[in-house]
Structures are given as C-alpha cells and as structure tokens.
Length: 335
Image (cartoon, rainbow, N blue to C red; front, top):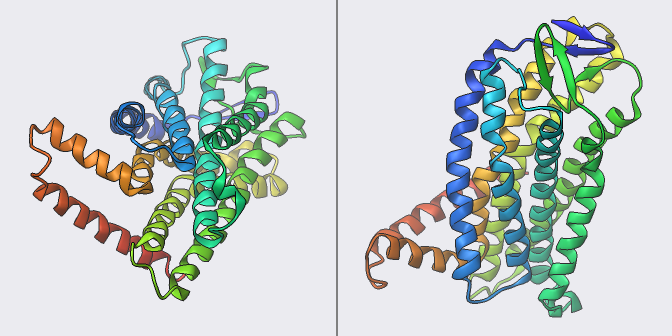
C-alpha cells in the first residue's frame, strides 16, 4: 500500500484475479441482450409508448458503457495499472458514472409511468404524446451529464508503486469538495429514486388487491414488471451504495489507510453488481409490455427458422418467466 498525498492506494490481488473474467462475461451477455433489444426497438416495434422511449434510451446507455468493461477488465488483469492515458481514463470513468445514473433514472421513469397509468388512469399525463416522453428523456440526460461531467475536468490517477491507478473513488483524507459531491451524488441517486420505486411498487400492488376486476391482467402485469425493476435496484445498486456509506462512517473514526483495506475491497467488489444492471435490463424490456415480449417471441422463432404458429417452446419459456416473477413477488411480498 502506498499513500499518494492524502489518498490511499491499495493492492487488491483478489480483485485482479476475479474481476477480469466476471467483467468479460458481463460484457458478452450484456452486449448480446442489449443489441437484440436495440434491434427490436429500431425495426420490430409496431407501437411506441412513453415507457418504450425510456427503455430505448436505457438500452443505448447500456450498450455504450458495455464497451468500457473490456478496458476495465484489462486494467484489473494488469494489477490495477492503467496504460491508456489520462484522457481515456477520464472518459471511461465518466461513462461508467453516467451509465449508473442513467440506469437508475430511466428505470425510475418507467416505474413512475406505470404507476400513473395504473393508479391515476384519468390523469392528463396519460394523454401526453411521445414528444413529452422525449422531452423527459432529454431532461434526464441533461441532468445526468451535468451531475457527472466533473469527472472529465481533472485527472484521476493514483500511484501505487510503479502502477498507475485510474479511479474515481479513492479513500482520501481531508475535505475535498469535488470528492464530497461525488460520494454524495453516488448515495443520493440511489436512495431518492429507490424510494420512488418502492412507493410505486406499493401503490400498484395495493391497486391490484382492491381491484375486483382485472380481466385483461393489466394491473397484474404491472405488478410483475415493477417487481423486476425493484429487484434490479436491490441487486445492482444497493451493495455498492451501502459499502460507500461504510467508507464514510469509517472516515469519521479513522485517518490511517490501514483501516480501509477491507472497505476498499468490499466497494470495488460490489461495483461489479452495478455493471450487472446492463445484463439484467433486457429482462425489464421483455416484461415491459405484451407487445415487446410478443415481438421478442416472434423474432426468436424467426431466428430459429420456425413458423409463427410453432410456439410450443416459447409458451413454455413464458411459463418459466411467470414462475420466476411469482418467486420475485413472493420475495418482495413482505417488504
């Protein structure tokens, strides 16, 4: 371990061994799912709705950031030694931070859209056209860029022996306004949207309980969909947020780097779950609307060289999906 100025830089041999193959697998599976989703959005979507706009933007963000993962994997393979220069380090860290924010914000937008349609079906927002959804998306992107662009303004190099570490999160002692904002935004962008998703989940679930007539299964599908969104929030964003809060707490007690080694290891391990959202988001696309899942089934049949009427295997897969959602709903039922 070396201390560069007032910042701690650690050797992490476990991360150097485990993360490269994990990141590479996330790249392969995530890219496959999101490219397929983009193809469906671009060429096979018959009907566009506001939530389709939000999910298309999410798929674009995921597809872009996935190309950062091979470079991140190579970085860990070299023992946390960055060899691609200062500018690319800044761009990569910016894209990773922007993707996390985009994943959270657009999933929240979809949850809110579903909440308004189910709980407030007569609200005037439901009569807004697609240009309204595009305006919301542009506003979200503007906010994301504004809140993460500071990562492009200065180097993020930390030196440990003869290695150059490229990190946006390092444990630095003292009071650094930019670092404080980076940490605060990282935590706030989970808890505020997460609270909104929990609220939407509770309201839609309650709506399903009090509605005696749901002949088309619209509310039930909305409940299943919102549970998938909540599950992604917990799996992908909760671990890294909690580990970052733990670092904050430790900084109030200690001022020496040796006390932060385990916390540093826990944080960078949990960050891999954040990247995992790009792998899981295609599940959100699939369960977003019957139109999207139906289009996906037709595309799978076409790729397998089967006629549209031959849907035996697809039907069985939908049954498996329904069982998966029932398990998710059971897990969250006590929340």
